[in-house]
Amino acid sequence: MARMAILVSPELCIGCRACQTACKSWNQLPGDKTVNRGSFENPPDLTPHLYNKIHYIEVPSEKDALRWLFVNQRCMHCDDAGCMKICPSPGALYKTREGAVATNKEKCIGCKLCVVGCPFNVPRYDEKDKISKCHLCFDRIANGLQPACTKTCPTDALKYGDRDALIRSAQKAGYEKLYGQTDLGGLGALYAFKDAPTLYGYNEKPGIPETVVFWHTVLKPLSYIGIGGVVAASLIHYIAVGPHKEPEEEDKKNG
Ligand code: SF4
Ligand code: SF4
Ligand code: SF4
Image (cartoon, rainbow, N blue to C red; front, top):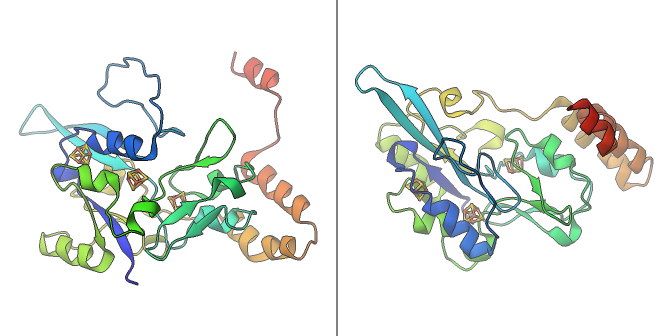
């Protein structure tokens, strides 16, 4: 079937955060304890219980005192997904026929390697040390429904549909090239940015770390045939994340 995607249009977003709430509601995710940090942006980052969030950006403007940008942050459902490339547990991360990168917590072994493989800092871990992230509402879209967040968005700042059709509609609206159109094989979350991606907190050219590519092409196949799989996984974790530290040691380091 045709690849599906979400088109994010920050220019249409009013920062109401209905998308955040709808996701929690559909996925029965608990609330996160928050504190007043002097910003409307809350929580400040994705959490194991928050699969998408609105990033509030204040930009100095010549015309007005300030320009506000609201951008929905989420899993990008990359075609060439770094998280899947590095994951040593088959089936813990998998592609659906719509193109979603979905998760199976039963198969997640809690190694956290997908954190290293993701160029967008998306995967989080729940209380049971299982991966937690947006799965593109695989349970809804498989039944012909749209994701809860896009259905709830009152302004069409989030639109779900056929990926090619979304690209065409954005081009018609004057966005010559979308962020994510070709990056990493094409992302499943496309962004209609008016300004440089860096202004919204995104890398111009997102890429998968070389260590992950090496793991995927050289070491991972060896692990499947049982030659040094654990050693290889430990090695790549050491290179990418660093040595394991006891909590006490870490606390002392942080004062
Ligand atoms: S954004 Fe990260 S977690 Fe989502 S599919 Fe891409 S690599 Fe995986
Ligand atoms: S697609 Fe579904 S799981 Fe992903 S952020 Fe939207 S509501 Fe949450
Ligand atoms: S629901 Fe739509 S308009 Fe409201 S914050 Fe989310 S993306 Fe923006």
